[in-house]
Amino acid sequence: MNETLAKWITESKRIVFFGGAGVSTESGIPDFRSVDGLYNQQYQYPPETILSHTFFMRRPEEFFRFYRNKMLFPNAEPNAAHVKLAQWEKEGRLTGVVTQNIDGLHQKAGSKKVFELHGSVLRNHCMRCGKFYDMEYVMNSTGVPRCDCGGTVKPDVVLYEEPLDDAVVADACTAIEQADMLIIGGTSLSVYPAAGLIDLYRGHRLVLVNKSATPRDSRADLIVRDPIGQAFSELP
Image (cartoon, rainbow, N blue to C red):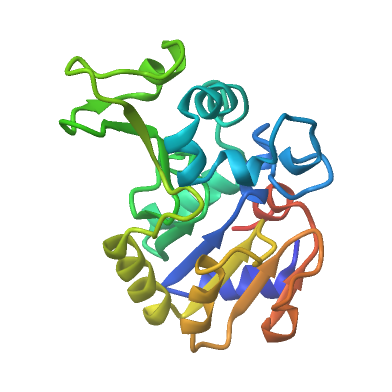
């Protein structure tokens, strides 16, 4: 166990966790940019192209073929990191989870205050009438999922070229600004504007938990190189 990290956690009252794809890889969900991630798998188009607004509008059939195959993991379960964060929130020491992930595993573990910067695969809405559809509906449909009204059902996931939700960003910013400890885990801190949010933190307990180096290592007060699930399972 990292004694410094454990001590800071027990002393803090407003912890905020900022996480990326690495938080969910231990739950069997592949990371886009890791060695075994989607960017290193063969597909007709690069994932970044397929997961863009332009591609979604122009080639929705191809988008959904990729989306169902590579983005939906209905059987994934929370790992030790998700569980520990939910525990800290219940104990009153964690005030929010800011996540770049779209899998809903934080909520599945019991977290309530989750700011999903990039949306969620669990929510889908008709582009014409706004009707809600769950993940199972999209997963079990064929071709382009259609609403009862005939409109296209679009996942509530922020695609490339699309803006982040202003309200979600505002809430995440407030949580980070008010935090007395900021733990960043499982992210390369290379995706903007999300990565830029950590600049709002003004405290002196900035912890980076990541297996590889990030562009922000020099800003950290503490760096932990262990897999995040392993690191968190040892904490109080």
